[in-house]
Image 1 (cartoon, helix red, strand yellow):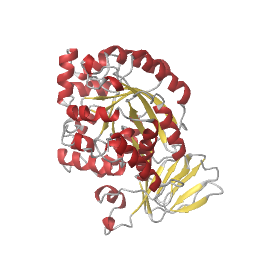
Image 2 (image 1 turned 90 degrees about the horizontal axis):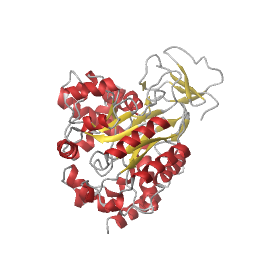
Image 3 (image 1 turned 120 degrees about the horizontal axis):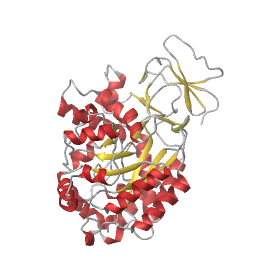
Image 4 (image 1 turned 90 degrees about the vertical axis):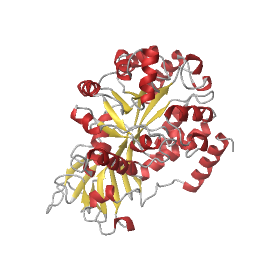
Length: 448
């Protein structure tokens, strides 16, 4: 965190009004926007010359499964839709070890940071024997790297023998899940606008947990005042499963179990009808749009315009690397822009919409209004991109170029006033060593 004020001076472009000459950062916050023709009013500033940089709010990733970086492009799971894809991967994920998870989460967070991400969620719901401290491993990695995190204590207690999808070896019983959920919140959850680590509760999906666990998790989240997350309305198969198993559609099941409300954000949200979107909007339940994953699994396309018209907040998520095969949030912005532009046309979707989803929209998903915007009083979470690659040559609008020309690597990233990416690299990170460690863990899990 900066105690000496830093003036991010004269950027090439900045995604903020009235800040043509940049912003001043102090004590982890944005304390001043410097308009054209002005000098900072803040005393004692140290200038950082941003003349070669496009400055945007730090991007916020609202859905991920870090451990899945160990199963990228896995032949056994390729060219499958969601349910058979999951059944192919569960036996591999059941081999997850603490050492492999540490490598996986470090790769995922590092890739996100290098793409301009300053805050990320993770949905970890696989707990084979020996991996009981999975969330603790994630917290340690996040602190080493300096990224903000909202880590969700995922869960599954409905295995194959009970009519669910996951094998018995990766599920836990209800009492274990609830006790550990409470322990994690008590141990790690930070409150307030400067929080770096937060915990949310996240049963995996309606087809992998019981109604009892859904209800008790919602009650626990309410008592502890933490957020709730799950997958919902990702595929038509899920709709059919819920109707056969529970006698209702997924959103009805969610509401029946006490989940429909402002502390909840949902991954995907592809197959809601108009009446359900209205209910989501009234409840202030938001959606994490995962464009790359939805395309790779051919699940469908989130109806973002109808959602927003109904009052539903939209954020962006890269989703797990086994259904995206990358953790690059800037590329996810472009993918969401292109997918939704193709659906709705040039008159309804612009590059600014996609950037808004990944910043202010995502901040709302994770309940952090102090993030996702360059404005006085907001957190000093910023991403700075250079336009010095061939892909940007000739670009007229620097901010539009990030999306249209395919930016993929930030030059500088700041979290809470502290530089976490410098000259396109994470200080102190041995990338070659990490790749070697991660690749070996992936090979061991995959039986290579």
